[in-house]
Structure formats: structure tokens, C-alpha cells
Length: 150
Image 1: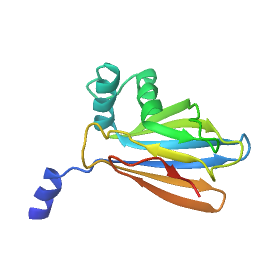
Image 2 (image 1 turned 180 degrees about the vertical axis):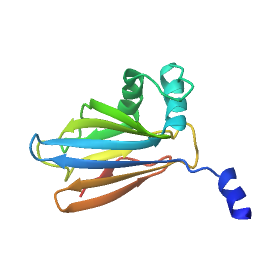
Image 3 (image 1 turned 90 degrees about the horizontal axis):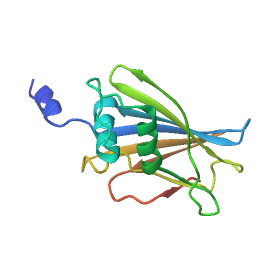
Image 4 (image 1 turned 135 degrees about the vertical axis):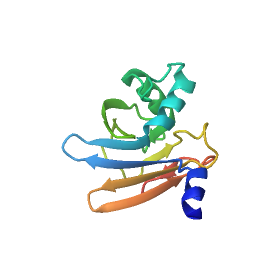
């Protein structure tokens, strides 16, 4: 029983992202999974948009925050523009989609996920980069710099 109390006192602050290379259109597609309540709070602080009672925020505000905190850097060292490709919600979890051009695949690109670092000192963001058969897991904690996709 003590374990349940411990879990309640120490909530999990994490995001999970799958970053996949789509050969058909030479893009990197990221599906970012976040807890809706934490995300709504972060977006509200960043954009000034007040989340609804169910923690939802308008897509424009969500994208403004994600495009600041989810960074994809091309092989040339330039930050790549993100495009919003939608969102869906399943219970308390929000799944958001963003895309970036990836003419040469993911290998050699760098990226960072700093979502909600401004809210939680124990925030952990995990990105699984998938390019064909290659998979690489990247772990981001506050203070982490962009990491190379190998």
C-alpha cells in the first residue's frame, strides 16, 4: 500500500516521441505523446492561451509551443521548419504530429525535445528515431543539448 502512496506523491513527467523517416515524401514525421494536463499548462505559460477545463488548447497554440520546444536540425546545421500534421486525444494522453523535411533521411540530423522542461525539473523526454531498420533512442533531460541521430 505504501508504494501506491509513493507513486501518487511522485508523478511521472515524461513525453515519448517516435520520429520516423518517410521515404515516399522524404520527410521526418514526429508523433509526440504527452499528458494533456501538463501540456495544457506548458502551452498556457508559453502562449498566454488559457487551457480549457479538459486541458485542451487550440492547435495554433499547441503548434507554437511545440515548434519552440521540439527542434530538428539538418545536416547543414540549420534548424528545419516544422509543419503541423494534426493531433488526437486518447483519455488523458495527447498525440501530436509534426513534420520536417528530411531529403537525406534522419541519419546525420540532430534534434532535441525540451517540452515542459520549464515546468518540471524531473522532466524526461524520450525520442525513438526510426529510419528503415535503424532505431535509436535519445533521452533528453533539462539542460540536454541537441543529439545526433546516427
